[in-house]
Length: 173
Ligand SMILES: CC(C)(COP(=O)(O)OP(=O)(O)OC[C@H]1O[C@@H](n2cnc3c(N)ncnc32)[C@H](O)[C@@H]1OP(=O)(O)O)[C@@H](O)C(=O)NCCC(=O)NCCS
Image (cartoon, rainbow, N blue to C red; front, side, top):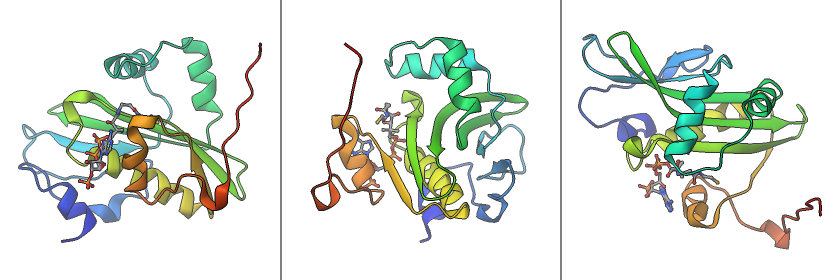
């Protein structure tokens, strides 16, 4: 079973991976409007209060909205994940990457709403983001994993401390 099929084997979803190039792309297609579907988007005009609610739902500290707006505007790639029921859309996942546009990208703010966790959607979101980065010929992708999600990223092929390299941080006093 291919990646997309195995991810979306729950009722009401079927795979349509060849649509993944457009800015708002449907990962799942359904003929009936009443059946919820999941789609991904690279558009940046996200309601920042909706994004704040999503981040609140996983217990992240609040950040000034104007700074979040700036961070999104200046990100290299943004991939959001939505559930659509009839005409209603709900933001259920988010991720973004900054980059030097040539060699390196760093992934930030990976989040899936708790109601949708454990269904393979975090993995799908990350795969979409990495695919977009690879399409831009970025070959060095890094991230900073919270300790409780190290295995989530390992499952996606990320390695902690390759060749002994340590992430180092500087903070103002
Ligand atoms: C981390 C997060 C994005 C994972 O999303 P998700 O939709 O629950 O993950 P998936 O269902 O796609 O899981 C994919 C795989 O990772 C594993 N996994 C998921 N969360 C995990 C965790 N916290 N620790 C270890 N493994 C995890 C799953 O078991 C699954 O394994 P499998 O492929 O062998 O079945 C989500 O839990 C989240 O938003 N957490 C809060 C925010 C956060 O901590 N973000 C990361 C900041 S660095």
